Image 1 (cartoon, rainbow, N blue to C red):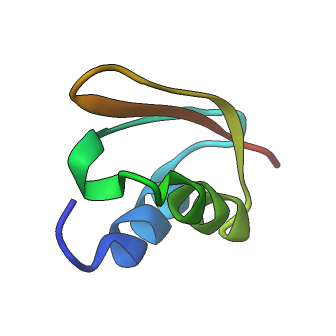
Image 2: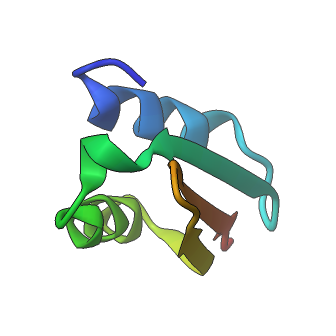
Amino acid sequence: MGSNYKEYLKEGYRILKPYGSIFIVEPQKKWENNSERLISELESIRLKVVDSYTSSRFLYIQCLKLK
């Protein structure tokens, strides 16, 4: 995602079918000590965060669009 990630997320929500999944993979360094902000943004656009975890290099988030 670019620096305007909120617009990317809103567009992803808009085109996603109800109960569809969206998977987000971001470099861990970009969100280090700040991943809760990204999760909060996802929830603010009505995406349900199903799972989130980090590896040594990446942050993985799985969300569902609830109807």
